[in-house]
Image (cartoon, rainbow, N blue to C red; front, side):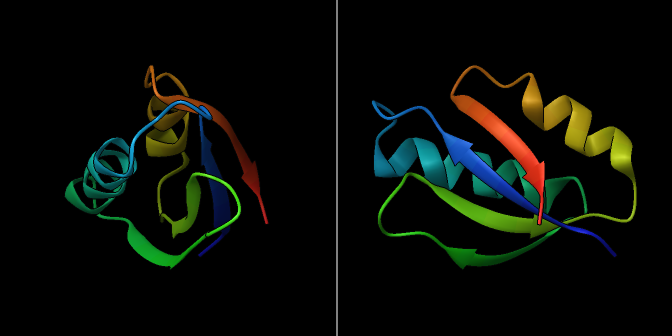
Length: 66
């Protein structure tokens, strides 16, 4: 299962990051490490379609494969 780094916009609050993390969990992803220097975390999915949808979330700046 590929691992992706999800980086949220710099003005996204911690609550906003947690909402994106929950979105990943709700879509069947496994959330891994949460980053401290940037607003982001790692997530892995079996289905790449969820990665495409996550990229379209307004608070997400970038999603890239680890």
